Image (cartoon, rainbow, N blue to C red; front, side):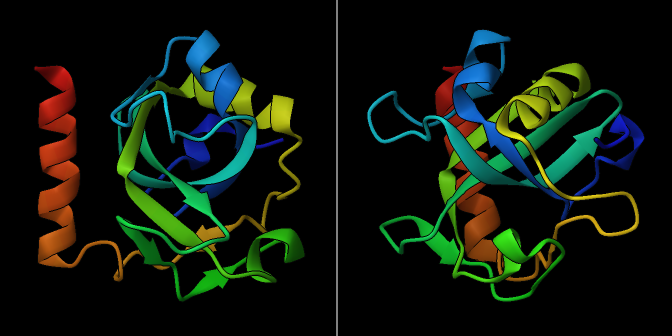
Amino acid sequence: MFDVREIRPGLALFMDADVLVAAGASCTGQQQGRANGAHYFVCVAAERDVSDWVATSSHPGVGRVRVRSKSGHPGWVSRSTYADLWQVWTATDDVVRRAALAAGDASERGWRNLAALRCLFDARIVACVTEAKRDASL
């Protein structure tokens, strides 16, 4: 299991989206099409005890950006990964910990799943994430 002090942009955790929802996390995506069950999520922002995560998929799709550089557990690095930038999940550290535990995240201290975020932080993409979060709060 991981220590919540390890949460930072670029960390990828295998988390249960249903646990995230049940425990109070918010998601900018609509119910239809949002992640359900266990998925990898990539942290894109962390401040104090709250962090933002994007859901990932092994399939390309509208609004998804390929995560090109990854390290960590073979289950994370062995397949193509696409970040769904319209699914920004916001959760407290405790909720993240519970969702990762429920999904059976297999990363270990010193060998965490990581994603290079340069592909996600292109100026256009940052604007999309910001817009999605703004629209969700209206």
